[in-house]
Picture (cartoon, rainbow, N blue to C red):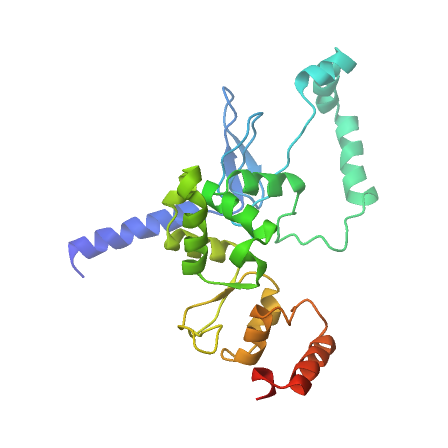
Length: 262
């Protein structure tokens, strides 16, 4: 192995050692000496301000808690609040009572999983706040179900063209959106990308499509089950319906004849 290769390997191992260094970590508070803390978490954050963290909708790495009570609120209710708090932590008997409560009295929910951070409303709000502005605009179009968004299935070209037509007069930042950004938005919804392109019309051009609603149901379809897909675009099929209801709708169309009778 060359000296360059060895150095590169040592460097990578050093980085891994820094990442995987056990369950005891150093914690440094502002203007206070570092102390050792045993835990399962590597990252701590405490602030009174909004925190610009960019997290995925299905993030499984962290928990975020927001405390709405401010220092001035506590002091208004009890001017000696912090004096009592510091005295409490210096009282060994009080600390023993806290330990007893959380070890023997407090019941942990059966749903609690020590390996998965808890989901909180504060975390959901944080994820939304850190979401790309273009994604937020697309979220609004998604909720409005206007234009191409009224269907479960969309493609980046149709979404792009709808946005460009709407933005010609308004001249907002959305006019700079790209098809790549739209595809990233599909992924942010955990959308289902059909494996092969297809046409929603009998004589239309083939395009790549994504399911952005009822995603599990659409992912169960064979890629080219076009009768079901075209029935959805014709307003005859809602994937939220029970499968038996869908079968009844198709039976009616088959009885009438036409493309769905084939």
